[in-house]
Image 1 (tube, rainbow, N blue to C red):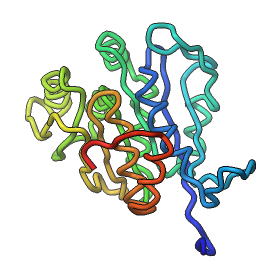
Image 2 (image 1 turned 120 degrees about the vertical axis):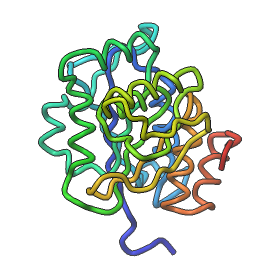
Image 3 (image 1 turned 180 degrees about the vertical axis):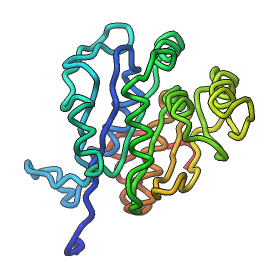
Image 4 (image 1 turned 180 degrees about the horizontal axis):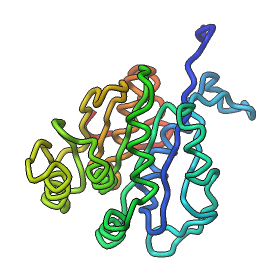
Amino acid sequence: MPPLNPPYYKVAIILYNGVDILDFTGPIEVLSDVKHTPNPTTQAQDRAFTITTIATTPTITTAGTSLTIKPDLLIAEAEQQLSDFDILLVPGAGGSVIDTLIASPNPLEIDLIRRFVSLAPESGRWLFSVCTGAMLLGKAGVLGGVTVATHHRFLDRLRGVCAEVSGGEVRTEIVNRRFVDSGVIGDGGVRLLSAGGVTSGIDAALYLVRGIFGDEVAGAVARDMEYEPRGL
């Protein structure tokens, strides 16, 4: 019997020009498959996660100009309802895209990350980075004193970003792992989950689902996707 008051989660995903496609579509596929009424014949499915994409512009173009996407909200709009979201997902991109973004003056994407971590204390919030999305977290200054994963080619570059933000002191352990649950960061009760490169985001999303809904639900999602989890 399903619970009388099943949990629901609102997920915000930061998109920007050049974002890697699988970094965000992989986790979306996982989270979209979690339903409180898991009946494949049911058309109106009771999804546990509601996905909202946000960006600074009305449209964004993904890596390789493969897709043009119209976000659900502009970042300025998302800021006004940021406390409504339970999970903030930050996908990555190629090195030149990330370098340009973190070098730009006062990027709204990075400011939004800071705002999310600084929200009034509330349990159950997650900050979730995939691949080089961790570079944006590093630039936002939210990785001090934690262990974090990123793409294996960007380990040293993320160390450099974190050291620069902290004034030269390296207080972040950067590791080559499928994903890392760093626990709660800051004073707002936000829990940090970081994934390594690209497909690692799928495994990290399955880990998140398992932590909230249990092994059975996470296993069912993986089977539906015909995906063999790694690192779980």
